[in-house]
Image 1 (cartoon, rainbow, N blue to C red):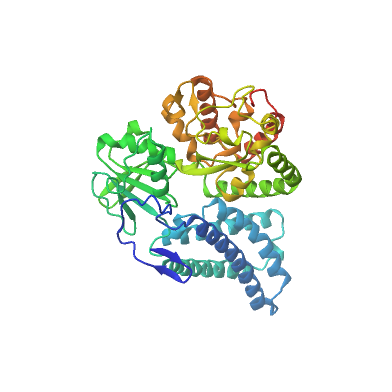
Image 2 (spheres, rainbow, N blue to C red):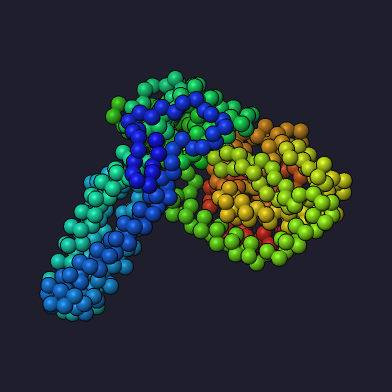
Amino acid sequence: MFVGSQGWSGSRARVDILPWAGSAHRPFAPSLERKRLQLYLAIFLADLSILLGSFLLAGSWRFGTPLATNALRQAMLFIPLFAVLALYNRSYSVRTLTDRGYAVSRVFYSLLISAAFLLFLTFYAKASDQFSRFIFTSGTLMSFVLMTGFRLWIFQYIGRRWGPASQNILVIEDDGPAVDIAHAYRVNARSGFLQLDATDPGALDRFGRCIENMDRVIVSCPKEKRPHWAFFLRAAGVDGEVVTEVGQRLGAIGLRKYPGFTSMTVSARPLGLGDKAMKRLMDVSIAGAALLVLGPLLLLVALAIRMEDGGPVFFRQRRMGRGNRFFYILKFRSMKVDNCDHHGVKSASRNDHRVTRVGRLIRRTSIDELPQLLNILRGNMSLVGPRPHALGSLAGEKLFWEVDVSYWHRHSLRPGLTGLAQIRGYRGATDNERDLSNRLRSDLEYIANWSPWRDVSILFQTLQVMVHSRAY
């Protein structure tokens, strides 16, 4: 089952995912998020083109010329009003790709309100005598008919090219009531090795890969397991639901009703599609520009590391990323080859004998972190977000998630090159549990209150703390 360039192949009337094959490391479903974003943009541009074409065609009928000044003037006033109202009216959302009635109603209301607002403006500007009522009425009605027809064609296009659904829905069956959703992917928690344990990063990684590219995850389980699944769905940063009737203690954020059962929404993506696109655009543009500007410095550092002991320039370490999935972080190697701590069990300390001379300089100035710009371009990391930690890191004598199990919730966003905790001074060695708690509190605060302006602010404040006393 896949979405191919020549159209849909396979059926999702009931897709049973077989037991997890750990060596495959490939998602069960193709991602539809980018396709939806591209389709929203195409529909938006098509709507604006339809508006312009409808008014010009109406002007051609009225005045006999396709570029009548009166028609063009009305179109130029109508188009920006419609664009703003259609975006505000959610005319380009997932529901408009799954519900024909909703999609058509969004077009109708957006056109109606735009027309009413334009009439109001022209009346108060005393410019109504310069407008042709025939062009205005014909252009608006023609736009509605064409936009409606275009959306009905879009539904046919989605069926041919994407398959029977415009969303990837995963149903996890864990001894709960039957869940009958057409075109959903399914996995049995037992046969799929999805017995989650907050002390087992490997199990969380399997779960993270299982839900990768899923738009919604629905878990059907007994009552006593619902808090367990709710916790891990929130930690994964996915739109998660638990089939239940009562969920006060789960912190439910909504209900979804289906024929024959009701599910409770217990988690949601921290960022919407528009916010994610904006954040990713910032990441790619700034990281790409930084690599170009800092290229000579990076080459000099790489040369210095190589000349000191002849070892590799980069240090790769497995860490936990978005959705609690493993990835390999890149850093300039700052320790001797034989003393590199790939599990991060022992944090570097002052006058640490493992750190090289070059390493001491690049660690104190945070230059050792710059190769993570490549992680950002790959999509493993973001410029700003919770810093990814080594799996063996200790706060005092405990692993990080043993100090506070909500530690896993910090992975609902991409990890960052810098973050709110770092500019507040919560960085370096975690000598005691309080050091970890301060970081975690800042990370969860950042996730709950994300905004693009806060990212920009954190980036500027990071420049002031790149050299710090806790960098060994």
